[in-house]
Image 1 (cartoon, rainbow, N blue to C red):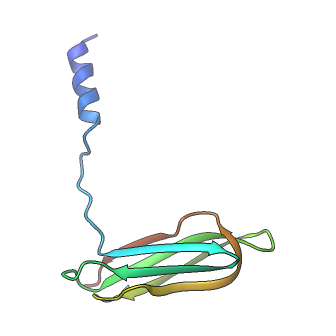
Image 2 (image 1 turned 60 degrees about the vertical axis):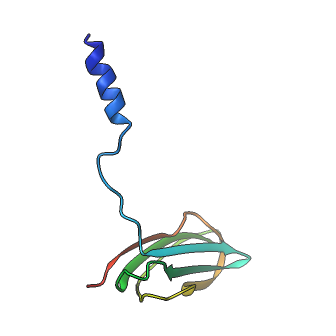
Length: 104
């Protein structure tokens, strides 16, 4: 075995090979006490409107799973906007998944 090649591959594996862009939207959600709520803010004043989609797996008080999903537009300067609000949920089965892109 060529230990130099193995060592080089191990070192290169530790470096990411792609860039991750900072999102212009910041979102958070919680499900408890019978309700669920997802809020988002536009956090980059230089970024244009953000077109976003969301998906969230929630556990109902009846013991079932429900997936809620939707789309929304988030303009610059928007802060703490309620994107989704519902009742009949006692916990979240996943974190909300929110994907945004420039609306231009």
